[in-house]
Amino acid sequence: MSATGPQKSIVLWVAVLLAAWCTFAMGGVVFGVSALFPALYAQNYKSSACSARCSASAATSAAAVGSWPATTKRRLAEAGEFLSGSRGTLLEVAASAVLRGRSLREGSFFDRLFDRLSGKAEHSKAEHSPGESKPESRNRHDAPHRRELPPPQPHAHSCSDPCPLGVETKCCDHQFVAFSLAASLAFFLVDAAAAPWGELADRRGGKLTLAWASLLSIAGFAALAGGAYLLDDAIVTAGLLALGCAGPGVFNGAFYGTLELIGTGEPKIRAALTSLNAAAFDGSALVFMLLRVAARAARVGLAAPCLAWAALCAPLCVALWRLLPAHGSLLAQSAGP
Image (cartoon, rainbow, N blue to C red; front, side, top):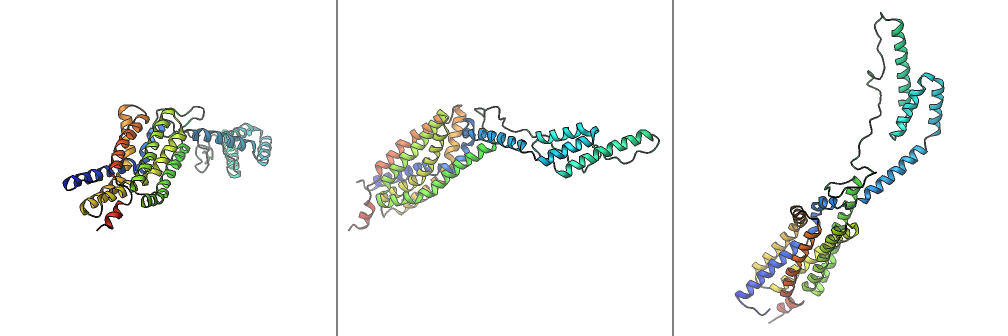
């Protein structure tokens, strides 16, 4: 850049603002991935985890019923034969326990048996002595120590029906866990990729680093848009991982490249570059929230806002890339006469 005086100062401030914008638009966007949860739930992202949970639950229930202990079966049969009057009650208790997925404990079984016998004996005594006061009974209405089987709890997701589209809440806990795993992998890539991008910026310059990182980030937004349009979980996950990997590269490329452009002078502009880039990287967590708000306001899916964001980032990154000098200009200025 051959501009001098005020013109050079204007160019430097434009480069600082473009660097801050690129960092905001593509730097740490994955840190705000929680804002995408409702939008991705609406497109059934990772809903296959709920179907897998239903299959696993059905297999576990079948195995539990099939492996009913032989000793428990024998005890129920013996008790039923010994107490013919209570046979129906015992069979009902056993069937209720099997259907609700609980095994009968010895204590609860004999508590029920004792309560039933006590209730019958007290009822018979009351019929033969109507004038006497009724002794303390231990039937099911006034025995607070008895342990009752709770009614089956309803589930948020019915295994017979698929997860509905357009619902911005999780279909089941397993879907939330799968979503959190993908987000955690993206967070990990942000930290893991910081050192390689920094090494590339140091060896090849910020201009090349910004070019590669910007291309990867724009590809990540395009993958999010394509996955939302095709309802493909793999493409959406690839987009999230690409954005996590590209974020530190955009930050390092924009910062180091603009620093090479400024040179050793202009301390105020260098200070502004440092503060604005740091603030933009933290503020980039708002990007996903902006995309979700745009999708909800326009009543469209996530595909259109992601494509629009990628289309907005591309020309601004190209404008910054054209302003940045080749690698080594800062060293040449330091070694100059």
